[in-house]
Image (cartoon, rainbow, N blue to C red; front, side, top):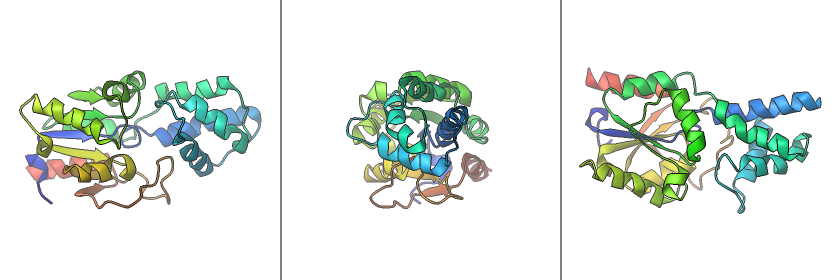
Amino acid sequence: MSKSLPEFKYMSFDVVGTLIDFEGGLTSCLSEIAAEAGVTIDGEEALRLYRSARYAKDADLFPDDLVRVYLAIAPALGLPVDKASGERLRDSAKTWKAFPDSAEAMARLARNYRLIAMTNARRWAFDHFSAELGHPFHGAFTADDTGTEKPDPAFFHKVFEFVADEGADKNDILHVAQSQYHDIGVSRDLGMTNCWIERRHAVNGYGGTIEPAKFTKPDYHFTSMAGLADAAAAARS
């Protein structure tokens, strides 16, 4: 490892999937719609269909795009094919829950690091996610702020510019994320130190997240945010 945890000034975070349980939020809403329609769905199958539809060429910004995604996947799941249900799925993002360890871990990390959110979600959704997490962020970048989405390096360069204004650079940042495709691979290519939070360590496959062309071995690897917070605390003791 090139740097120890106490050497970083910042930690940047993927939000949806790392801190917020978007897979649980999606499947919970879809299951509610299914129950009302008198059918049942398989959560992993729903995520597979979601993943295929979400990364279509005509995709919109997240989570607004969930209306289009719902209409694309509803027939295969036996769900009602109507825009109102799609809007219900989109709006469910306002109530998605953080993983049980996220808020406490972020509060602990905020004592010693400046925390930066880096999310492909739109600002309206991020505002709900941040509130769910207890507003731990020193800075936040959304798809609305950057005009692009990860894994576009341009998204990361916006963050580099932000920390440069505070007298730091990318070497002062530990990038923390669960997505190999959106975060871990590109952060490595950009010369950042990274930390993979393997949220799906007990489940096969990539769920709702696109599979990377290749696996990138991270600098740090934990299966929870609590693991990272514990390691950061231990490194300072």
